[in-house]
Length: 261
Ligand code: MN
Image 1 (tube, helix red, strand yellow):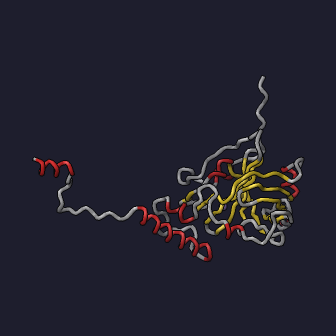
Image 2 (cartoon, rainbow, N blue to C red):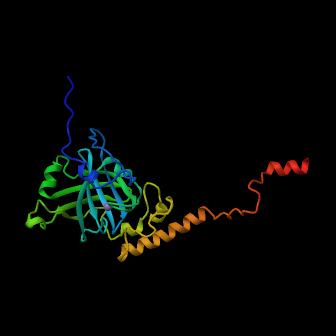
Image 3 (cartoon, rainbow, N blue to C red):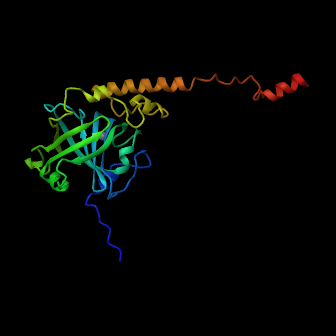
């Protein structure tokens, strides 16, 4: 008899309920328990209504996810707010592109990717999440070394376990420092593209209904849209409109036929 499949306690229901897959290129995905290999992580740079960085850690067949408005810092003195969001499918770790409308509308870049592990190899990650403290190490292209995620006390009715807000803090280690890694290394590790280059691959979207209109994200999106439009124009130089007076088809062979004839 076959052993019953171990089922993951995690679910993609919330992820799926927030999206209309006929209108977004994001993967539907599925829970995929992997028995071998190191755990994967990714950080996606996401210019939506606000610019933020989504930290995702593989756990029990999904990607645990936190939206980090300022991105990860290498400076142990900087506590970065990290809002826990819904579990994402593993396939999401490779997703880079444009979400034209709906939840998360904007531009997504694979900003970093690699493997992660809890610092205590015997750590029970579910228990750590429940208790609100996870110490972990990243081995990415841009991010290396260890961080801690600590849930803050503010939640519904002051209850700690209901709080979605966490703080993400770099440990003091060999990789800690003052370098602003989001500034120094802004492009995709998947494609080496910047946000405008990712957008330029698409036909024009967002004529009026831009995902970000105000503030810094609005300004950034405005300039990204402009740059993408310039890139498109350069790539596809405008062809002269066919003149209605010219014959519909001036086939070169016909011409040759004339002169040779
Ligand atoms: Mn996001």
